[in-house]
Length: 474
Image 1 (cartoon, rainbow, N blue to C red):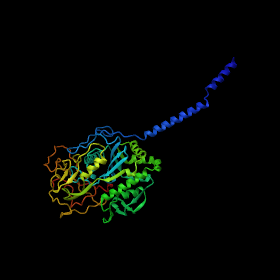
Image 2: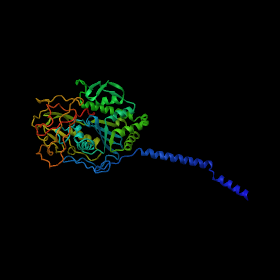
Image 3: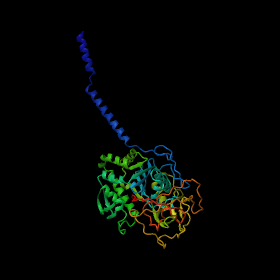
Image 4: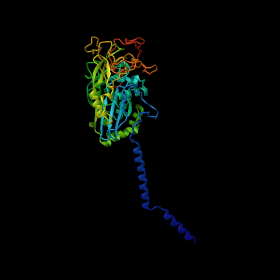
């Protein structure tokens, strides 16, 4: 009896053992499970963005922009394709006063693999209630930080007639760090560059020619505008610098998408975390990168353009001289918005855009029919002839590296006007922007500017402005 029991126990143990085929099946299942987990983890790195609710901020809190009496940009509608996205990219130099001299409006049609990146010149005139109306000072006019970004977002949205889907704010240091993480970028430096500013510890010395640029080299090339001897520099001034930036960014993106940069993703993530503020997640940005790589986006499919513009001069109540601006060429910008920038199928008209211009009598006007600065909407007290024909022309515009701090600008102090119509006084506590420093650089030298506590000829007290320092490129 005991012998039969032992025999049954041995048979049971034999049946409990796995056969070779069963072991193989379990091994295959384990491999598949690991593979599926790997695929799931990989897919979690690439997350398609969702269109944001324009009434809330990134944290879900209410964030309604006060558009005032001007243009209310389009914030929704039928899209040209399923995956057509727009992003406002702003470059900020915290160490140089915080101004945003780099402003790029990008559209990316993922469905058709076409992208357009438009540079907005820093001296673009915008519809704000301050005497000096240069767009690169809007961030500081708004108080800097999140409030300054929102103010700049508002002005650019009104300029082009629609709200960009997302914002990306990049600190100055990021570009150099990315270049170093890539072990350099090959680029054809367009000219010899020699500039020194000991006060800002800024030194630019680059030789013309095609070579491998380090992060520091790249920063010097992108910041350069002219030599200390102003006879040597870009003949087009800031527009020449924009063209160099666009060429460098094109070369950088082309080299960044190479396979050898994939193992460096951790370094890129660290640069992103340290230097970028955005309402996109890093997974969203990786999704865009994956879409470009797998979709076959080529460098020739990415078009870099500069906002169509012309040079104008407008009288400054605070400086008592003419200030140099650029204003959009209205019809050309409208065409660019409709064909390459706007994500919407609906066609825009000039009345949908807030494009500034200077009339023959020296007053400023807007295609929207509303001017925020009521005083500027009237002919100035001084002659409206441009500097080239005026007997009191200002000195030649200096690059930002050399320009001193301009006088602090005052808001108009009155409600906006439609064209040159009669202005109205705002209600008490209406929230006129506080006096804020104007855009650094690119302004004519005051002759002289009002000192702190003095009153300019338009009755607005001026306050002393801090030195903006050197501002990053546009």
